[in-house]
Image 1 (cartoon, rainbow, N blue to C red):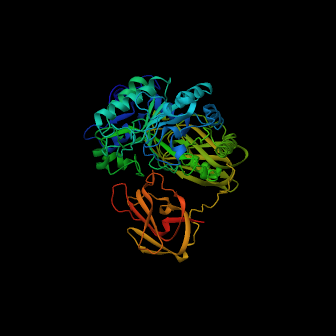
Image 2 (cartoon, helix red, strand yellow):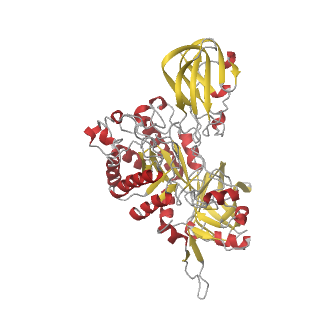
Image 3 (cartoon, one colour):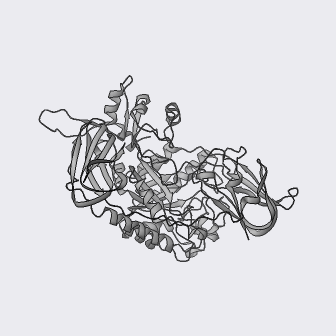
Length: 605
C-alpha cells in the first residue's frame, strides 16, 4: 500500500500542551506497530493513542448511510445474476434518482452507495469496457446513465455519494485471466472515479467465484487501491479496504463490545491471513481489541465497523417482499445495535422495476425517522456536552430535567483522542435512592444503552476501567417510546409437515405423505444461522413414486445464503404434481450439504 495509507501509519505528534512545560502526548493515526518485547502496559498505552484519519472520523459522524441495490437482478428476480442476462431486460419505466435521494435525505441518511456493478457484471453506466451495460438496454434508447443521474441528485440534495463495484464478474470473459481482468477492473474503477465528481466511499466485497472460463481470479488489491488513492484520495475504502471493516453479518447486529482500535488486520494486506490466523480471529470474532488480544498482537489498526442490512429480506427488489418490509421496531433494534454499538449503519433500500423506491419502503423510512426524531429530540441531561476527562475509578453525576422519565442513556467518546473506555456503569437517582440501570464495556464514537424505564433526577456515570484517561464529550438521557413488533408471520411452508417423512438424508428425499400440486419450494436455514454445511448449489426433483424423478430446477444457486441465511423461495415456473421431493445440494466448497427436513418448505396450491 502507498500514499495515504503509508502516511497514516506514521507516528503523528498532535496534541497541545495542557500546561507550561508539560510533555506532548503523541498519537498514532490509523496504524501502530508495537515495539518488539513491548509489555502489555506499553501496548495498552499505545493503543489508547491510536486515532482515526480525518476521512474515517467524517465517515463515523454520518451514522446512517444508504445502500441502493439496483440492476439487472431487479428485472430477473434474482439476488445473484449469472452474467448471461439479456441487457434488454433492464428498462425501468420511471427511474427518478431524485426521488431516491430526496426520501433518503428526509429520513436522515447522509450518504448513498449504488451497486454500479454487481456480480452479474451488468454496469449501470455506459462503460467502454463491456457491452453488458445500460448502453445495450432499451432504457433511454441506450443513452442512459444511472450513476450520473444519482450523482446529480446527490449534488442537488447535498448528499454524499459512494459506489459499489463488484470485483467478481460472471460476465467478463477475461475473469480468471488475472492480469487481463485486473486491467479491465481498473479501467472500470477509473471511469467511476474520474467521470462523476467526488466519491466519498468505495465499497468492495471479497466475492471471488468462478468466471465464464471456470477459473478463479487473483485480484491485484494494491493496484486497485493505488487507483482509488490517486483519483479519489479523500474516499474511504470499505470492507475489502483498510478504512472500514465489515461487522461480520448481514442481520444489522453489531457487537456490544466493539473496538475501532482493533487487532484484526485488513484483508487487503498480504500479512493479514497469517496475522489473523495466529491471533485466532476473523470479522466474526466477538473480541477484536481487548487487553488479552493486545497481549498477543504485534500491531493495531483503526478499523471501525460498518453494519449492513436490507430493509427487506432480500437485497434486490422483489414484489413478493412488499409485505415483508422490516417493522419500525425491527429497524429501531437494528439502530440501537449498530449506531448504538459504535458502528455506522448501512441500510439497503432497493429501487423497484419502475426505478423508484417502493411506497412501502418510503412509508417505513418515514416512520423510522419519526421514531428517532421523537426519541432524541429531548435530552434530559443538563450540561451533557461538558467535556469529562475521566481516570479509572472516577465517577460523574449529571442533573436531569425535572420529572424525567428515561430508558436510554447515550455516551460518546472524543475518538480524535482515541478509544479508551473498557467498562462503565450507569446509575440513576430515583425516589428510592441510587439504582444501577445499566453496565457496558466499550463506548467509542457512540454507545446507546437501553434499560427499563425509570423516573430519575440525576444519573451517575462510573468509569470502571479505561486506558489512560477517557475523554467523554457527550452524555445524554432519553425516553424511547416502546414499540410493538407488528410483524406478520412468514408462511414459507403451506403444507403441514405432520405427514412428512424423510426417506434419505443425503440427498434429502421427503415423502410428503400424499400427492399434491406445488408451485415452489423454500430453503430456510435453521435459526437463520450460517453454517459451513449449508446448501449453496442444488438440483431439485419431484416424483410420484420415489423411483422415477423429474428435475424441476437444474444448477440452482441459493445466492448470498452464507451471509444472509434467510428463507429463499424458488418458483418452478409451472405447477407440478408430486408426492416425493428431492434436494441434491452442495456447499460453497462443493462438499455434500446437510439440509434438515424442517429447513424445507413447499408452496402447495
